[in-house]
Image: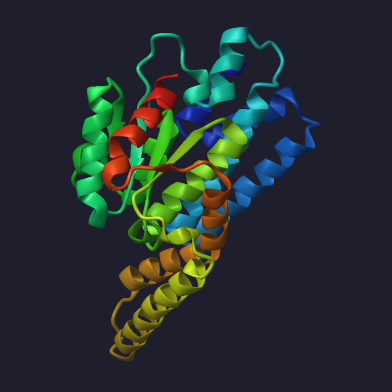
Length: 280
């Protein structure tokens, strides 16, 4: 199997087949062997249903991005293939004249701001993917998130108290940060509410998330007493537990980067800078 075919397998989520092919080409590569072990454990955990779908998607995304990074180092690489993998489909791999695609990550409580950002970028000839338009009826949310991050050049996150308290936005942020570090994905953050700059923000957020989890636990216990299913509540509680674990890292990353303020009168200037950076 050629290097290009292995890359196609990875981009089509055929990770098991890609690992087999990579092991055949580099049988003594300890990193590939380690990733193969991680993949096998993930499949066993999924079969045994001992992990949540959200955690499984995040782990799969991490393994795939690591394999893409290794794929560019395989023998018989053409410059075109190396360039494609180096960017993982991200902004760094955009060819001249290519219209960039942006996945807009936001909390639905901030829909008005998201619509304003979407309309501004489209007026600058940027392709914008937003769930209210692109997500199909009945489509799995986690699958939609991973697909959008993987297929877009840039993930643009609208940062607010609402978004930072959202488990779904937390998944989008963590997945993009992993891709940014491993596979060249680009993450751009614009601020519509700067409360997270306060040192006490994370502790306050912890309290809110813990209250949610306590409420969910009580609902789960009440159902169990009546021999009723709890899968929906369990999934929601797992997402919030992951957010509880990930929030300090998310906030630390946001504080460490240049975030563009687009609140109130700063919108035109801020979004003008964002559009310029995206278009290169």
